[in-house]
Image (cartoon, one colour):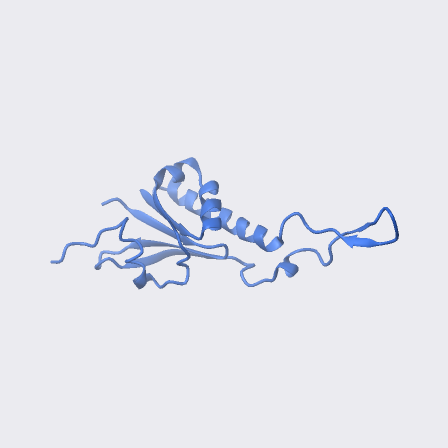
Length: 151
């Protein structure tokens, strides 16, 4: 049976689980947490947005940033998770990969994976299972991993 890694992620937390030999259970082998996981967007950016003067009068307006700093931090975290997965793929630690994440994070994760890691992807699930304990993952992953035959 090929060695399967399941990456369960969202924009702030990620873990890699693998099937164990005991009746379809999964065990976490790697875990990642964002350093900005519980930081507010306003705390991630500059103190105040820049200002611009109105042409027709003395009015001034704040300039909105091009991207929300919180969304940018989530994207950067997913890219870092992909880098870690890529390094383990280069080391040959797994043969197949399943990606589990909410839609936005799954898209970013797929885009950030190297060609080698992308070729190992055998499935994906658009769902946030980051807070689901390891013992409750079996029903979600039944499509990619079969339970061992009863002795």
